[in-house]
Structures are given as structure tokens and as C-alpha cells.
Amino acid sequence: QVQLVESGGGVVQPGGSLRLSCQAPPSIISINAVGWHRQAPGKEREQVALITVGVRTEYADSVKGRFSISREKNMVWLQMNNVRIEDTGVYYCNVDDGTNWPPVRHWGQGIHVSVSS
Image (cartoon, rainbow, N blue to C red; front, top):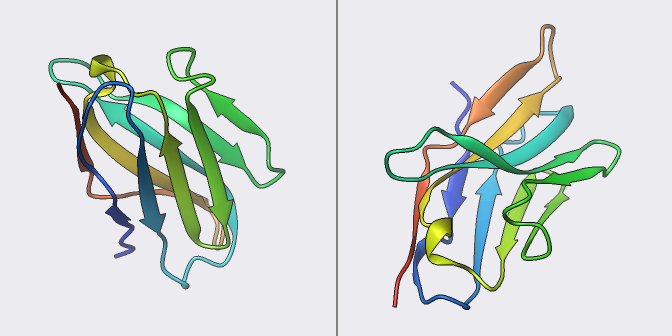
């Protein structure tokens, strides 16, 4: 079973910054896209940021200009700046694995981010 390892969550004050990391195993040779989702309390999981193999990025409207996704080989980061209380939630990394057919989406275990004063 493929395991993505996330780190970097925690408690941060409004206006602060946080950087989430996600490590995919070397067994994933071909990555089609990587992204971050989040699930706020009482809400459905939503996509926050995505980066494709062509380095095209997409962001949810609520995080544009504040969050930045980046990737280097099998590492993915989400830089969160000027965070807001509504950014609180569990953040999940995903990797779209194209190593074999059909492609498979792998998920991290989830990491908590709490924005609180």
C-alpha cells in the first residue's frame, strides 16, 4: 500500500504562515498531478490547490494569492500565508500516480491545521 507522509501542521494565529509537506515514496515513478485538499469541521472535503505535470497550478478562490503549491520530484509543499480562521481543517495531500494503468490517486493520512488567536 502506497503511503504519503504529511508534516507541518499545527496551530497558527490569523495572519500567520504555515508550510505543509508531503512525501511520496520512490515507488511512484510517474506523477500526473499532485494536490492538497482540506476538510473543515462539518463541511465536505474540497480541493485547495493542484499542480500538474506541466506545472500548471490551480487554486480554490478562497486561497488564491495566499497559498502556493510546489513540487520537487516526490515532494509536495503547500505554503500557507496570511491564514484565516476559515482555513482551519484537516489537510490531505494527494498524488495522481501514473506509474501503472489505470492511474491511481493516493491520499495522505491527513494533517490538522488550526488557525486561532
